Length: 265
Image (cartoon, rainbow, N blue to C red; front, side, top):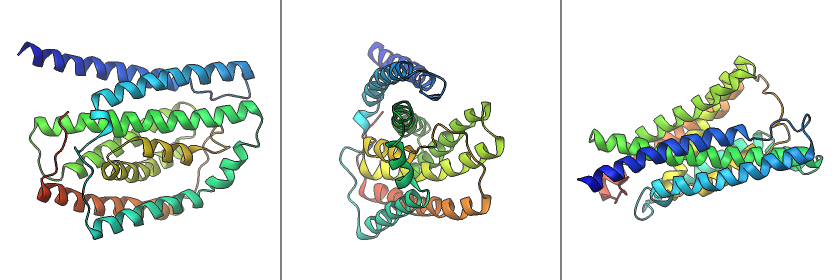
């Protein structure tokens, strides 16, 4: 019994430390390259990297080294087809957003801007993915285990973590236009649904961190948010939510039918 209590206590301590490192990492983002020196930008990037390494190590330690299942899910033809469609839709969003040209512009920018854009994108990709699709994913799993929820588990986890992911962006209300933040909340929920679905399928987090980094690597990442068209945004991002939910339905059924070994948290 004492061993059980010790492990439970360790999880609480890990959770507090993970949250602390997550918040601490956000404070060291090199967000203002136009008002700080190159040396100051480099200093922030170095500190951010150190925090990030410790953060990822700790999250991996409490999340079965990123794995949800003992082995990757065995998928049928329909599920593989849906995954291909979902990945292609993500690539469509990536291209439609002008990420390629914007990403190339980063490497034509002055060194301060380049470092800021790259490390903000790295921070967003790694901190957000390992915190949301790693630690929070694991936390929701534990809650479902506690209340013995056995049906539609993957769908519940995906929706809850994507909702928490989009809520994180409300912090931008401190210095961004409210309507622009509201739009960001909506489309980050859609992107979160794609990422969490692919996290389940890949049984890893690091591919999503790379995808998130590439999606955020833009020359305007250090600029204020801009209000866009609600209609255009909803038409663009809503299909990704529908596709993700459709695939999650099949994945849940596959896990239940095949009794896939879900690693215990």
